Amino acid sequence: MRQQPHRQSVVHAEQVGCDLGAQLQALFSNRDKVIEMRYHVKEDQRHDSDDSEQLVLNDIFDGCHYQTLQGEYVRLSDPEEVLEHRFFSDSQDIALGLSLDGFTFYEDLGQKESKNKYNSWALILINYNLPPNQRTLQKNIIFLGFIPGPGQPKDLNSFLVSFVEELTHLACGIPNTYNADTCTFFCLHAYLIIVFGDMPAIAKAMCMKGHNGMSCCRICSIIGQKHTKATAMQQGGQELAISTTYYPALQGPDGVSVWTCQLSTHTQGL
Image 1 (tube, rainbow, N blue to C red):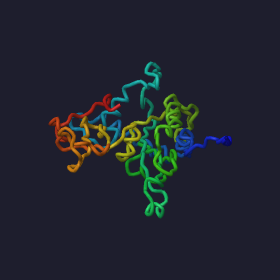
Image 2 (cartoon, helix red, strand yellow):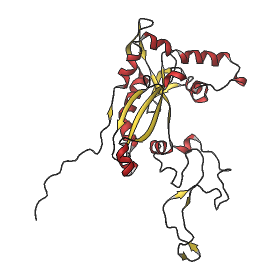
Image 3 (cartoon, rainbow, N blue to C red):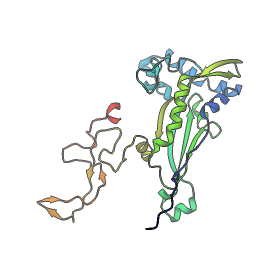
Image 4 (cartoon, rainbow, N blue to C red):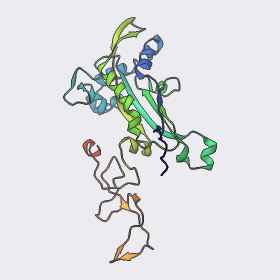
């Protein structure tokens, strides 16, 4: 028997990324950028001065999630490990949002072949400290990383391990960060307050099958129905399912419809 030569394991895809902490520190070395990033401080002052009954949701800082975080102490992965400072207790703290989305990197190839075969993923951070008309400009978005193809990532969270480690480091604080406006050094903190993207991206981030799964919705508790055809063979009066694909029926056999199903809680979604 011929012995097979030893084959070395090769990583299917490698993520390309940048140091997030260094990028955030560099923002404070620009005085004009520091002044722009005071936008969220003005939003906090507006929220405190306005009547809560007549408050209009103008931005993410008006949401209950951000308002709740302001009164909580920072916790890391260990629930019992509580830090000594609260979320956004310093006016220089940065609020971040993670954008997840796949795209066809090679357009010519994507027209001839399957789009998923040449699908790549970009990980982009939004700096919410900037005004809404500035935060999504190309010069202000923060490039976190790039997941190359071919194909979609099997485990999206495996590409986010280094990002989670950096977020932990930023939650604890990066000391000796220079502020070009005040000409002082401070401890930089940054927190991720939202993750957003299209349905396939969020499904991968939450380790869900997506809109073709049995539990197809991350917001409500509707149960998908298995796809069948009228021409399927019959066994004992029951129609055989000929597909593993599920779909959210407008009216399920249990009487629950897409209009009457209950919303899922955060704990149920996890």
